[in-house]
Length: 269
Ligand code: DGL
Image (cartoon, rainbow, N blue to C red; front, side, top):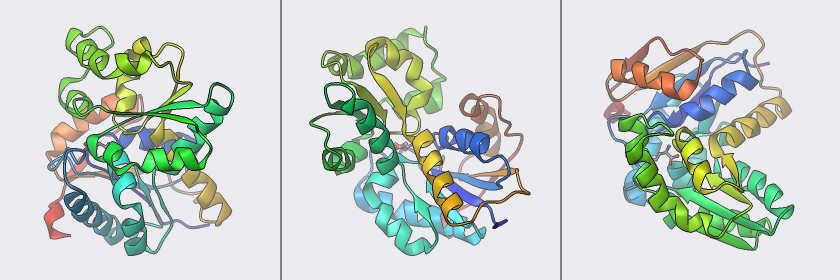
C-alpha cells in the first residue's frame, strides 16, 4: 500500500479523458492533475520544445510527491517518454504501448489494419507505427489531425455541429475509405470527437489511448503493491486560467466533478 498521489499531466484538458477512467477504476487513489493550458498545443511544436515542457510538467508533479506518473498526452508520450522516465525515477506510463497493444489485438481478428490519429508531432515521431509493426500489425494508416485539439479546447463540439463535421470529415474520410479494423485516438483530446469520428469510420473500433494507459497504470501499481485503499480526491492545477479550466473540465470528465482548480506558474519548474 502506498498513500501518495498519482500524477497525471497533459498539454491541456485532454488528459482528463484518462483521469476520468483512472478515477473509475481506482476510486481510492488520490490524483494530482496538471494541464498546461497556457502553452497548448504541444502537437505543433518542435521535439525540443515538447521535451522542455514535458520535463517542467514532470518536475511540478514530482514537487507534489507523486508515486507514479501517467503521461496523458500522446505528443509527450511519443516524443520523450524515456526522458520523462529518466527524470522521474518512479513508475511512468505513456499512452503509446498500451493503445497500440489494444489496437493490435483488434486488428489480429480482422485484416490486420490500424489507423493512428494524432497530432503532427505524434505522427512525425513514428512511435505508434514502430510499436504497431513490432506487434505484427501489417497495415498502419497515419493521419495527423492538427485542427482537432483547437476544436476541442475552444469550440465544445457536438455531433450535429456543422463546423465539427466539416473538420472531422476532412481528416477522417480518407481513412474511412481504407476501412481499418481499429483506429487509435492517439491524442487524449480526441475522445471528445468520437461520436463524429465514428460517422466516418462506421466499421472501425475506436481505441481511447488515455483509457488504455489508465488500465496499464493500474496493472503496474497493482503488481508493485503501490495501490492506495484510503484516498479518492483529485486536485487540479493549470498553467492557464483556473475558472476556464473548471468550466471546460466538465465536458471531459463526464459526470465526475472538478469544482476547483489552481493556477500555477509552470515556468518556475
Ligand atoms: N492531448 C495532447 C495529446 O495527446 C494534445 C496535444 C496538443 O497539445 O497538441 O497529444
